[in-house]
Length: 300
Image (cartoon, rainbow, N blue to C red; front, side, top):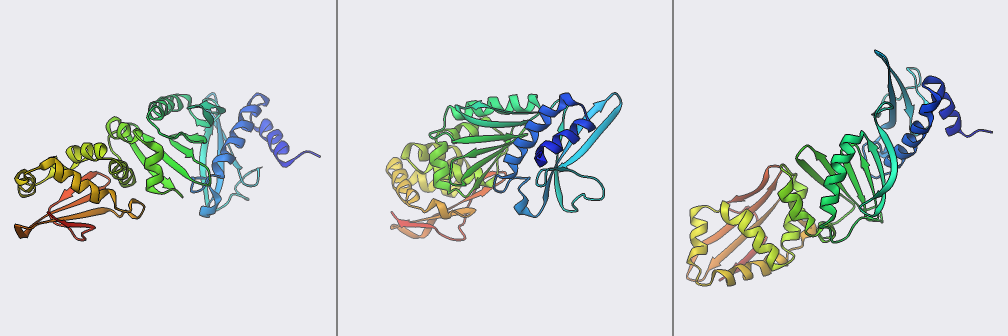
């Protein structure tokens, strides 16, 4: 007896052509892997039914056939799930392949031009990673980096922008795995999201040299005149920076919120402390004059 999958492929071959069957088979198998990824667009745990819509041009006519990735059957208006998430797969152009990328097993789904562009970006990022993923899935413009144990780093690349999301992974783990790739992504891409900047901060506070880089790129240029005056009045600026780093380094980064408040009190003038609030936003890292909550407080 034929399996449900074999019956589905035969039905699809009748809707399109027999030559399309291998590509549809590969696409369904690859998309089912995406479906099984936690928090993926197609994961059914979100309450939505995952559907792939196969499309192909026949002259001026576009033929499309929706298929349930969950039940492995062709859908129509009578059995179409009301709550569903669809992904289009163009048989004329899109591909679904297994290959080695970054030296790891990879599943690639999408149009070749986008896959090549994102693949090139990934290769450059991988050059700086401290730990490469065990597997990866490149799903159109989203990249799932699989570090085992259900832990993923999700990168979404749109043009010159990058968005980072952690799935069941701590900020400290992500910063450790990505390493200098964080600096590369920071310089190579334009807009980033809040979670990226949290990983950046976690990475930057892991060593004094990276903190020094972070401080002079993100903090010092954005200090107001009063805050700058505080630093300029310090007799030993570098020693103070090392002292500040020692406190920042002790923060529990895995419980990082959307801001970090720093208050430094001078013994000679305790009524005029230095206050710096580092705020992570989708527009970058902002430096505020006053802190709402002092996560770090010490006296010099």
